[in-house]
Structures are given as structure tokens and as C-alpha cells.
Length: 264
Ligand code: NAD
Image (cartoon, rainbow, N blue to C red; front, side, top):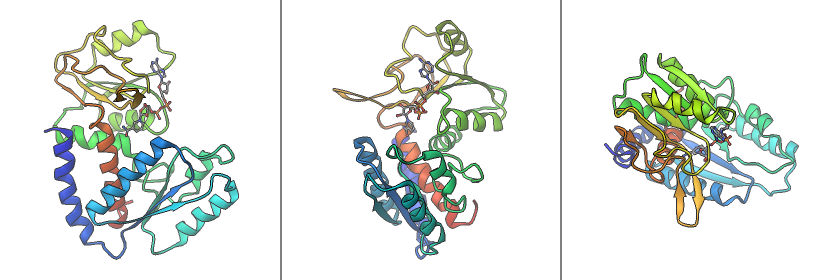
């Protein structure tokens, strides 16, 4: 099933689930940037919310808002019983310490799953796991290679794959090209989360039944491009656009639903 169809089907189910929690499902998005990519992500999240029947509120704060003021607003959201969950859209201006913002959000309301005590996982890796499961991709004892080691994608992705007993290797900016070739050649599942257009191309060899998950979003004059070229000779490769971005958006509302159900 394509990712678009998978997301569409799951959204129908989520809509039914959220209808049961109407009175509590208020979701707040905090925005403190004018970043065009963030604007696009927020538009997507608002659209999903209205399709799912979730009450989503966008709270915008000025770019020169102080760190203390933002933490006060987060504190208010933590204490406001009418708010089921919230996120603070990254990136934040220079005067704000993003890590302390992530720590200030109560794990009980942390829809992004960024807090170390949160029982929820960050949305991109969780969305990918949901899709791999839907496609019945076997992980146990399989060679999984994650390229990229960021706190929001690479590291939690590796942790989730490891929790499902895959043999996980994490590659990064200091990995030599020769080693990257060697690891990819033996990989069953490859997750590429780097942010370099077409880093992975047909110079690499793959197992013919490998699965490639392309997380990268790179903007050029023709639109969005992934970290991989299209049509690599593997069993399954996620497209960009129309791939992991949709899975991430879906996982955000899966996390919100878990909060509604008290499963966090
Ligand atoms: P990041 O910049 O925080 O991390 C990039 C990682 O890539 C680093 O760990 C670095 O070590 C590694 N890296 C850099 N150059 C490399 C190279 N030549 N070879 C191997 N590894 C290299 O980025 P991020 O936040 O993890 O995001 C990665 C990409 O995924 C970006 O394009 C971002 O826009 C995209 N992204 C997409 C979604 C989505 O929903 N589709 C969500 C999050 C991030």
C-alpha cells in the first residue's frame, strides 16, 4: 500500500477514535518563528487536525519573546486542564535554549515525545515504525542501517529498531564513504536522515529486497528532494515528497490520541 493510502485509511480510524474524546482533545501548537518550512509544517498539522475533528489552536509569540516568557507560557499550558497536549514548533530564535524548552514541557502533554521521561516516541521514527509494521517488514535479526544521529530522528530511530531486535548500525558525518558502501550493501533496512540531496545514489549496491526509508527533505528550484535518488533497485523505497513527512504528521496525532487515552 502506498504511504498516501496508508495515511488516508489510518486517518479514518483516528477520526472515529478522536470523536470519543471531543471534550478533552484540545491540541495547542506554539509558534515562535517565521521559518517558511515551519509555516508549511504547521499548515499541514492544522489541516490534519481539522480532518480528524481535533480542536487545534495555534499560539504565536513574537520573535523577540524572552526565554523566561516562553517558559512561563509553557508552564501555563502544562497547568491548563483544557489543553490535552501541545508542541513547540522548532526552530526557535537564538535567545531561546531549545533543550530547556523540551525539558519544560510536561511529559504528560508532550505530543512530540521529546522529553526524556516521555513514554511517547518522537514522531518521525514512530511514524516510520508504524509504516514498517503495516508493511509487515521483518525486523528481528535483520541488518538495519540508520544514516544520521540527530536527537529527533537518527538516535531514536536506532533505539526503536534495536528494541525490535534488529542489528542496528548508525552511520554519520564521520563515516567514510567506503564504510558506508560496505554497510549499505549488507543492509535489509536503511533509514537515511541526513539532509543532503541525493547522497545515496546508484553508485551504492543494495540487497534486492532491501527497504529504504528516505527521511531527508531538501528544497531545490524544482521542489522537495530526498536524500536518495528515486527508483533505487530495492523492494521498497519511500518517496519524497509524499513519504516520511506524511508518516510524521500521522504519528503526531497518534501520540495525541495516546495522551487522550492516558497511555503516556
Ligand atoms: P540533523 O542536521 O540534525 O542531522 C543530520 C545527521 O546527518 C547528523 O547526525 C550528521 O552526522 C549526519 N550526516 C551529515 N552529513 C553526512 C554524510 N555525508 N554522511 C553521513 N551522515 C551525515 O538533521 P535531522 O533533524 O536529523 O534531519 C535530517 C533530514 O531529515 C533533514 O533533511 C530534515 O529536513 C529531514 N527531516 C524530515 C522529517 C520528515 O518528517 N520528513 C522530519 C525530521 C527531519
